[in-house]
Length: 154
Image 1: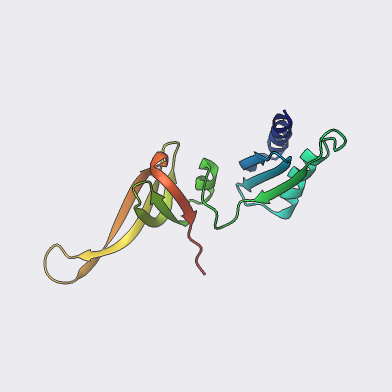
Image 2: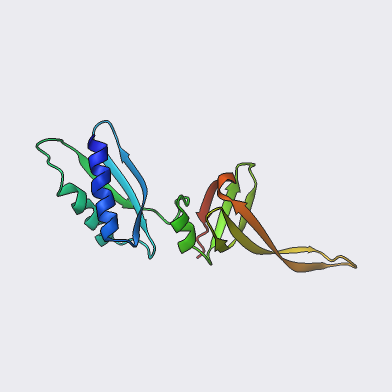
């Protein structure tokens, strides 16, 4: 019941700020509420404050004691949501499949079913000695991805 109330308030807040979206909502048995959000243009502190106030100001601490944490999805956190993939088009991803294969490449396309990664690799020439650079790509369905992360380059 308490979780449903929190979820309803959260949905209303995110409808008001459509550029923000939910990554996860956890309400623990001790009424600790942990919300992780992301945004199409990233998340700033003011976004977390907005969501926090939208929930906290509409719950009565006299009825239910709770603690509330609103966090942004970190840069090193795995991608969980289609919108996260969409906002990272053009960036390098490291994708681990359920078959334990790791593929790293530029995220070039995203749709409802899969993602497309592209990268360059050095391979032996078909004829003669030496190597040639070839462009490779992999279409990966979401249901075979066990973990996908943005590769941070400095």
